[in-house]
Image 1: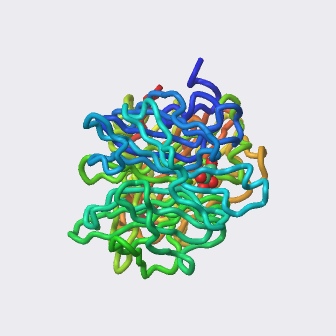
Image 2: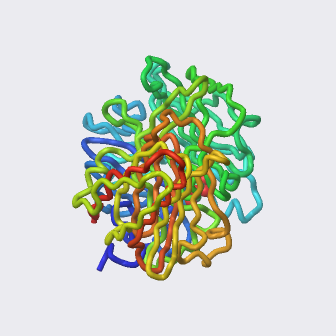
Image 3: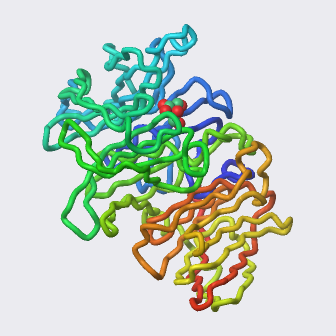
Length: 484
Ligand code: FRU
């Protein structure tokens, strides 16, 4: 039946069928979290893009909705964002009803095939019934292109202090900022990034927002930029910059790239607009363009990461962005599979856990050298290692199951630097689903998101404590409830 197929994520969002990539139009409105997404309803590979649609009241359980936006005479509907136009600045509202406004990229296939450079423009659509039905604006496109080949992925938010809408989009190797009073007429403000951050590939899917530094009154601005290729462990990845935004210009002293996630499967992630309170909630596409179209699922392709809360931390003199599953995800834990187990220094332990593939594993340790092996009866194994000598955490999925559907997928270990940790005794949270593993160290100061395709489920967890002094405490292993 639905949602029990091989590799179907049990507590991650995936479309009922067919191809999905980036999350789009993340916005909260009238009690509902909207999740739109890049969608091709005809096949399980990328094609003419639509906006698929799902809604949730808790960011955990989702209801599928009909396709929201279809391609039209201006092109395919690429990635973008959505806002609630509370004061009806756009004039799209009727009878005092605030419109939901989507701002997205049009990709003209004809323009591309004709060898033109201006085939990506920005368009607008609005909904007067909280996202159920959509109207395209007759004045589209609202931002023309004067010859930049990659010119896309507008993220819009309401900027309180300048009382205007701010739009960030990407133009190949940098971001561009625009301002508007009505969501239709846009004025160019500034550029950022030509000589900062990583430039191993095209910049995609930007997001700009303020965040308060944890434990202080200081507020900084964070700019998220996805890049493909050029990620630290190959292919697609997400970098971020911490700096300031004055309503016109984003500045950052940061020269070196910082990465939001060191796994290979967290891409094109952006955050929710219009959430009550200060929460910054992020969802990423749990795949990588290197092999996204080759993964061994049949009815649908790819899933989203669990929703994560972002937080900003100052460690010594540097700022780090942490991302950690929202509390409601951990509320999905129902039965306890393993109670507290201590693995002493220089020993190992083997736990047989039925249901390991749909679980939350929490551990706490000061050990600086250890391995966690997830195994099945075919001896397929996923290995997580903490390696103090090289000051890295590694994930080895080279023998984790099906890996040979594409050459990059199982080619090498994925490595993350162990820097910026706030604590000495580290907390680890691992979320295992039927085809993914998400690792969070030190409350998300380090995260690694990985797809995995074991031929049969893992049921053995081997903890190898190679530390001379510190024990490893498995706090619990709990079964995760299915959201479907
Ligand atoms: C990122 C991306 C975006 C684009 C969309 C097309 O994965 O390439 O830049 O808008 O996917 O589907």
